Image (cartoon, rainbow, N blue to C red; front, side, top):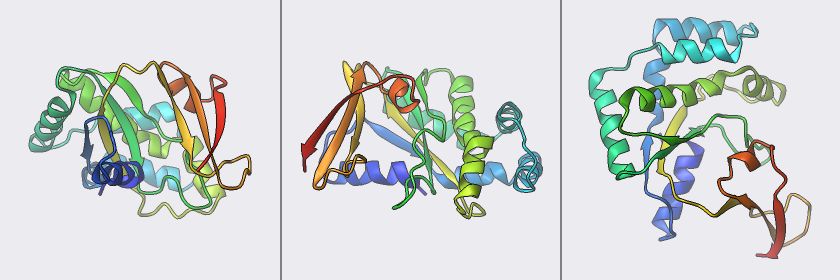
Length: 207
């Protein structure tokens, strides 16, 4: 229901750690959309090996209309989460980071989305869903033998914070230092870090 990222954030909140105010569009809503005929046809092509461009995938997902009761609920939750700020609309796939595989940077997340514009908000959610079937992540899953027949995508709605610095913490150092965590950070938002566009400052610390 919550996807990998959503479930991890739920655990952090349960442990009493500080997490920006968050809501989740559950994977069940994604499954409703991908059951629509146009999306079923698209995914049939993708699974058959047709290299459908990301732009076409985006267009098909964005063109689908969800039931008004669901769209109204998404808009309502987004407003409650944002409380006057903008939102991060983040991917939370049911197959995301596994014990031996990382999907970091494979799926789309969108920042500074205005929750008071329902059209932009709902389109952003659909574009996050669409990224599950872009050529690069689909090829990555296929190459690694990941069964994606039951894969789904929840979407995390998270209040943006005015970060001076942001980054990523690896609780196991990818560089191989035993018993250490690795912290990588950049000034401002971390989008440029996770996309690989900036070289971060890196720190290794004992856990």
